[in-house]
Amino acid sequence: MAEPERIQSSTEIVRDVGGSAWSDFWKKEDYWAIWMGFAILIVGILIFLPQSQWRQEMGKKMDASNATLKKEAAGAPFKTIAWHQASDAKRGLRGTNEAFAKQIQEFVSAPSRWLYNPVDALYRSKEVADAMNAAAKPAFDKAKGEADAALAKAKAAEKAAEAAGFKDTALNKKAEEAIAAWQSAEQKASSAKRKVGNKPFNRVPYLIGFAVILALFFSIGQMVLGNKFLTFIMGFFVVFILAVLSYMGEQQETMNYWGFGFPLWAIVLGMLISNTVGTPKWLKSAAQTEYYIKTGLVLLGAEILLNKIVTIGQPGIFIAWVVTPIVLIFTYWLGQKVIKIPSKTLNITISADLSVCGVSAAIATAAACRAKKSELTVAVGLSMCFAAVMMVVMPAFIKAVGMNPILGGAWIGGTIDATGAVAAAGAFLGDKALYTAATIKMIQNILIGFTAFGVALYWTTRVERVAGEKVSWWEIWHRFPKFVLGFMGASIIFSILDDSMGKDLSAAVVDHGILRGFTRLLREWFFALAFVSIGLETNFRELREHFTGGKPFILYFFGQCFDLSLTLFMCWLMFYVVFPDVMGRL
Image (cartoon, rainbow, N blue to C red; front, side, top):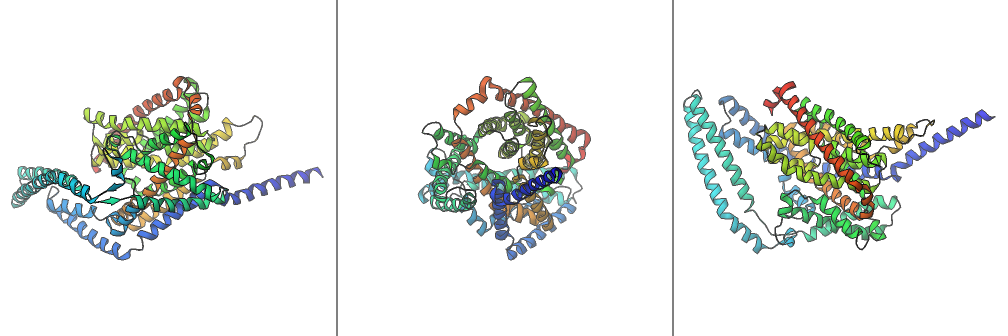
């Protein structure tokens, strides 16, 4: 009788676990993040893909540009004026340039850049816009005149080279140099043109409408999860206002130059409230850090297009996937064995933050090891401070030592934690460096899911395992952050969509349409809401214990130094020794 009773008990346990697993689909925050993230992705697809006439016209223009590029590449030993004009026309074929996409961007855009008056970020009168255009017009006229003169010289030089049948090396070189000078002048004219394109705007009505939509959107899951509708709505509008203010902090010219982005401002504003008047209970109900950021991370997954990884190829994979786990393991070992950080969860969260991809990896890792929110705040704060410094220092160092921009871009992409800071730092070195840096970071972002699973497995089987007890795979599954499945699923689905449309059309419709014209804008707002929530849930008393003796800072500093050294060596090894041909293709 005893044996059947034992079997029945085990069966009931399995049934309970299975039943709980099914109910998790609508009762757990991670799954709600997946459902809501995919709902947004579906809306983006429905907005951009059904525009068949627009896509057909775009396809015809792309075919014409490609035909010109092919013809010009075959006719001359250098990139001709017509080649550059066709290339520029092709780049201009983007979903974000369409009227319907601009309307979406106007509705969900963050506050604008400002210098002295913060109101300028939200409102600009016609008189102010006209004054700004009038002030910038002389510089534009000058740049436009120089570009026109450079084009005339380039045409003359190209005509001379063509008259010689492109067989005169000296004439070819002269034409190439003249065309390069024209391209440089065109870029300056384009930059100056943007400064005379100021238009009056009033973002306040759009922000109010956007806040209402987001409040209703997020309240759906919150009500199912047990939060009260009115309480959540009241708190959400405060969180949203703080997110707007954090964007305004980022958009101030000086702050933007030095890389103090909205994540830092959001946490500071939130902590200013939590450490002075305190965060009231009704506001805490809307300070749903993980709910916002997990939904945003599902959207981030759609931006990881696997086909783009192939363009960098094996060097990028080695740089991202070999260095990252080594740095993660080394930093965790350093924190435990040398620096003696008391909290293992803080140690692994910081290690994942600096080795993988900053905040996103820290969130996933903190969920996998069940770190305290104060520990997550410490990791995120250190990440943003180091990213702001490295964003300025690394490009300056790379230029000072004369490092190849592609090598420098790969180094930046593999070491700077914040994706936005990677793009900004890469842009300092030019288009090739920016492309390389962004792609390396994209490859590295894929490791978020694998890192979360590895940490969940290690924590369950080693760190928190009780001697003599059998490891439960259900416990590993329960600890594993499920939103990572949404992150990976979105990446796979959008990679298939990207591949099915072809390189050119996908770049215009998927990358510069659905993603940059819609989901990425929402993702950044979700991150801003999450960082405000982190600040509202954190006080200095909780942080004080973690900074005793400065150990987290010491860990981050030496871990980052090791990351910088190993990544630079791997970049050099991959691009100059193992795969030297890749450098020539970029």
